[in-house]
Amino acid sequence: MDKKDKPVHILVIRLSALGDVAMMVPVLQALHLKYPDIRTTILTKKAFAPIFAEVEKVEVIVAKVKREHKGFQGLWRLYRELKKREIDAVADLHNVLRSKILKKYFSLSRTPFFQIDKGRKEKKALTRTNNKDFKQLKTTHERYAEVFHALGFPLDLGAATPLQRQPLSKEILNLIGQNTQKWIGIAPFAAHKGKMYPLERMEEVIQNLNDTEKYKILLYGGGERESKYLENLSRHYANTLNLAGKLALKDELKVISNLDVMVSMDSGNAHLAANYGIPVVTLWGVTHPYAGFYPFGQPLGNALLPNRDRYPLIPTSIYGNKVPPGYEKVMETITPQSVVEKIHKVLAN
Image (cartoon, rainbow, N blue to C red; front, side):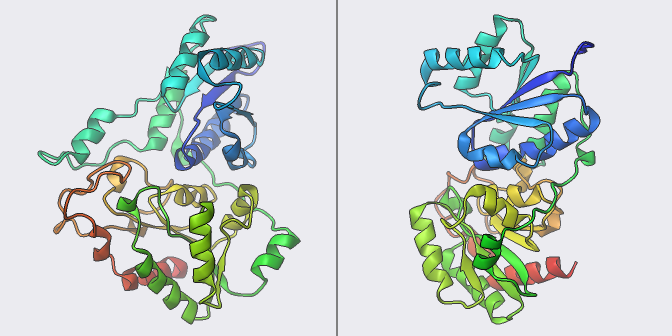
């Protein structure tokens, strides 16, 4: 694609979920580094807009899929709104029913529209019980990059640069405190139980770190239930602070950009931290890095994995929602001490 009269304007679609939306950032960084004249507009949900606040040359358009953009008529209204922005091409990084409908509408104006290949066949082979094809698949970042390649813009993901550390407001500093302790973020929750470290074991990790007096431990979560649990937990440990429910996402991201390390499940917080080049220690349950959702630019040695000799069916699912009988406790093969040791090692490096 070559438009000599003006910069190419690409619409990029990804409506959910948090981690998948966050994984767009390094790809966009690589895109704008190689093609500085390109304009990009991101179509996503309002809640995710702060993720792109520090990405240059990116505008966010909110998809109001439960209100005026609901259903066929709503998506037609959305298409008409987008066409007014003179979109030259569409990179669909979601490939779901809504974006497929938008593809039909954009075909009316012959706008180039390419969709992500999610690799369902390979992922099914990786997670099946019999004749499992246990090998590294393309990463989600690579699959995103393939869409831009199809539009005529091949990318070098290795050239992507992390987002810059963000200044903290007085309000945030008053909440967290100012001292010489290193900041450790811990996000103990995940969307599915199959990829969540047992909370009682995570508390052992927190207690061990807290007792060193070297760290400020910042707890992340979402929703009333998680916030309440983390608030109760933080009251037991002097060097631990619950941030869940206390900061908007834009301010949470500022804090994340100032962490010394993030400890996360196979979940969105890992990707948010990786976007800022923050070292991330990830804990994995019935999912596995081979599925392609490993945080960008992180050494594989930062991952703590269950014992596959004891649990050879891992990964049993891509999202952690399928746990075969007998696999309910796979993460108990990851000891709290091994988590603490990994954190210390990452911080030392």
